[in-house]
Image (cartoon, rainbow, N blue to C red; front, top):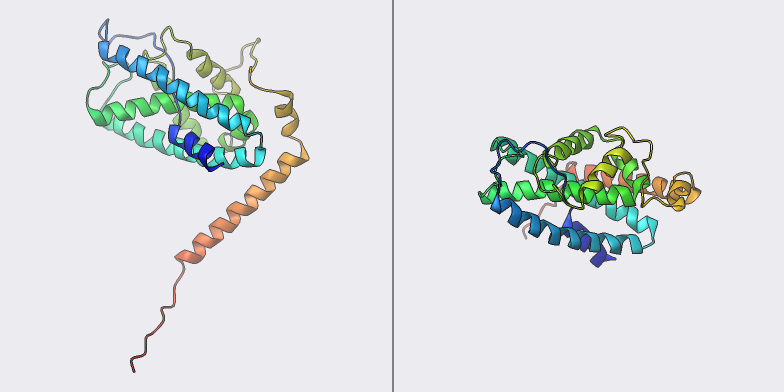
Amino acid sequence: MRSVCAVVLALAAAALSSADSDAHRPRHDSNLEIYKRLFETKRKDQLNALKNLVELNDINQQYKIIDIMLKGLFKVLEDSRQILVAANMQPDDPFPMDDKIKEAYSHVVENTAFFGDVALRFPRIVHHYYDRNSDWGGLLRWGLNFCNQTGVFTGGAHQHVLTLMSQELGITEKTPDFTNPYRTERDDVLHTAEAFQKILREEEKRRRKEEKRKEIRKGPRISRSRTEL
């Protein structure tokens, strides 16, 4: 269990899609082409890690892992956005060479795509978190817009993930023929099943207890006095 969690958290996500506008980018950006090859390798690693999570087949553990993973993923996404905005980095600019900006760029691309993978494979769990968090919604929309202009997904096989994820989460309107290819009958039953509702209640109780423990730790402490003989 720990190994699966560590793998998923370490990967912390993937990429978004392609661009129509190449006004700022050279016709042939060799550095971008190199990154796209590296990105393909990264995607394989991420999907392998996600496969382990799917095969875990324990919704209680999946719920806890995804909870932790999404918090970390969106924290990285927000930090990366701040770096790119401060550097005035536009998604259709030439691929960045500065290490700090390059790292932020890749984090946005990779985390956004990986979130798409998770949302499509665990729609009920992701909806439970995402639908009630407006900050995440705004951040994901920014990430999608950024990634759609990078050129990373132009002509690639991963663009479909972003399109499906956007429709699954209601970011874009569902097309008449929309289907989530990873959604199963179990997903539909799970939303109203007593087992899932029980997990949600247990998770809420655990969070409340954790919050109380944090409050207690922050409270005043009585230090022991030492008596000298």
